[in-house]
Image (tube, rainbow, N blue to C red; front, top):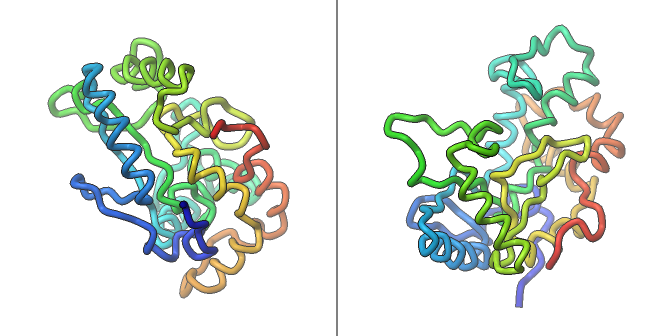
Amino acid sequence: MLVALSDRQLTGRDESHLVRLPSGHRLHAAVAEAFAALKHDANQAGFKLAIASSYRSFARQLAIWNGKACGERPVYDDAGEALHLASLPPEEQLQAIMRFSAIPGGSRHHWGTDLDVYDAAAVPEGYELQLSLAEVAPGGMFDPLHRWLDERMAAGKSRGFYRPYETDRGGIAAERWHLSYAPVARPCEQGFRMEMLKHAWDEAARPQGVLLRDVLERQLPELFDRYIAVPEGWCPL
């Protein structure tokens, strides 16, 4: 029986639900088992399914968020062009960052249920993985893997994995490489609340805090619905 994650686990501040894979990546124990089965299936089909990113702590997400908010990390638009974030109003800064990066405490990667994948066998020597739209687009180096995943998902044979960002719903950009394990992730989606974010920010975000927090809090209900909440029926169990 799966045990529901605590508030601290849902916001990336408690890692006790995770196991470490031989690759060094960490996942929820049930997700690790399911991924091993999917990886075996992929190997049988001629792919070397690998993880680019798995569990991400609150502290790590905070570093990414603050790095973008203060200009230390680049922020890109949908065309892949770098934005001059400081020239935008605070509300537009938020939207630009959240297009590709979650609010600290609000990332699905905190749960240990979500991971970014690629085909290691398709990577040319010396190539630096980008997790870009070009890599997964028709004709891209990882397109064959994702077409195979499409077929497995359509047939109900993807070991419980689906794509929460399969299409652009006006919030987070589509990410074909992002997989989620429905049997654990769906209860996490249903149990997540806005108040958890504020508690996480108060407890774990010192000394710098969450940059742009004042704007985040003013718009949090709208941002939560647009970037974090998942509509009922969005993913199958």
